[in-house]
Image (cartoon, rainbow, N blue to C red):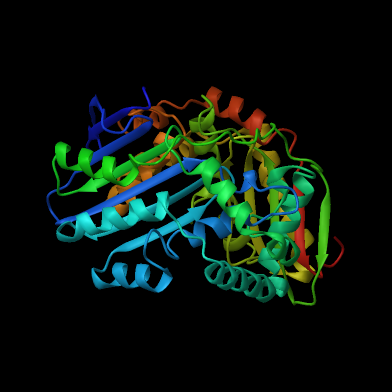
Length: 427
């Protein structure tokens, strides 16, 4: 697909992609939804927290939080007042590999909403008072989280899993790195990331193709080409088989664990996704939920998910239990993983997982915002405009052989990197 394209699609079937000549370097999809007179936009740029310079972790997150803190001729207060006066919802977020945002507004206020979005992206002010206010907010948040076992376990996990790698740093930074970030750092990252060429846009709302083409051109067409990004080397999870304790005086340990995974773009992703649903992705039906919570009462919640970054993919799990039962909970989790490695799921388990995953897929498209978010994520992963139409067929066609192949790549020999924040007995 050419990056200078726009497309029209419904939530179930694709239609022909049409060129967006007014704004080359932008891949844009849209869904016409005349039911509610509003517009929902979702967009993402390549390059996120992994682009933070050494010793400047938190730059991308700070930059994203400053985009609506004044732009063009509007200072922070004036910009926020302009949004509030028309109930325009504009927000930005940062991931390891992307910086994105969303816009939601009534169609009657679309012109003003698009104007403010264009200003925030192309002409952010990065006024020093705003920088210092956002810096103080981020540092206050870090201080608040200093005794949060979930935050501490997650940060230690990534530091141990990816030592010396960009993914090993917290996207929120540290008090020291946040204090070191300058306005020049923010401007440089903005220049590198916020631009055409890497931009994906999805729009849902009560408009025709010509209208949304014009809106997208006004919102993003004035952006320059994105600057060069720092290459992020491929990596893998370190310390598999190790159990690490973050000492914290709390009665319950919070546990994070991880194994290899497969990327969303990988042909084995769908089989791995079905396998993960059986292991820990199904909220109430997964093996881990049944064995850890229902049968033994070891934890209130337990689960796993597949995480896909540009330079690594992993199977990521979580639970929390009393300090004296941590080892038992981990043993149960390990046993269930070994059972899947040795025996695989039953035919009935596999069919139930496929039935659930195909039947529930439409729930991810029940609001305009969800549709826009789904579309832009599919575009970001390069899955193709027909992915929504193909996805359920891909799930339904997963076989036991596919599951075994995906299991060999994700579950491997069952070794996990485990981090427990608390005072677990015997770990």
